[in-house]
Length: 243
Image (cartoon, rainbow, N blue to C red; front, side, top):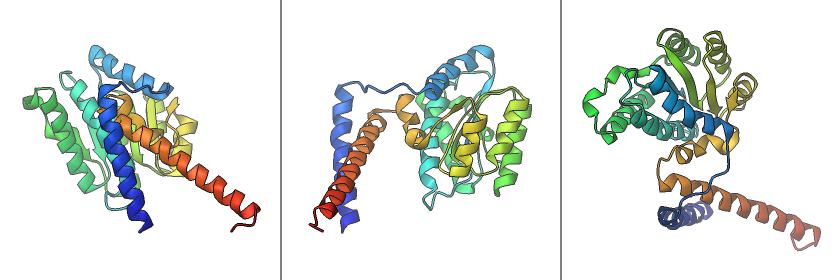
């Protein structure tokens, strides 16, 4: 019952704030990694290089799917903005259903840009079905496809070290985030621009994916403060002997 109430309140807040965000532009704090990503989008077209977006190997049927959906939201915007490039964005995944969604998301980006006929299905790939076979396929893309930046958004574990090392050898910058603590630590230590914690879920909003993405950040802040107040209230009640 409590979970249903939380979901209902969250959905209501998201709807109301989305309508509000459509009228008033969102004010977002500066995140250096996302500022650089925004700049890289334009530079890749000018330089004739391609971006590589990798969505990890998390299943869409468990808790790891949240980070993959955040990556798909970013991929949709990136595909739209680089669709006219001579070297279009390539995306990779380590899960079959996620790979299909990757292709569909890329096609949606091309369609939104009005150049659906330029879409090439092979730009969305499943590079392997185990963590390290997936990493091996991603490394091949980095080394052989004129990639100017690796954008890693999804479930990544220890294999993130291989991806970071391959990028460093090719002098390719990495912008990454993972919902796995091991993967996050590796990306933070090896990447110039690592996203921390819930910043992974803010990528869509910073790239201009829509009012609903900006609204989701506000809802996250509201829920975070409600949890903090509940914890403080419980501690105070325990200290006063109420509970």
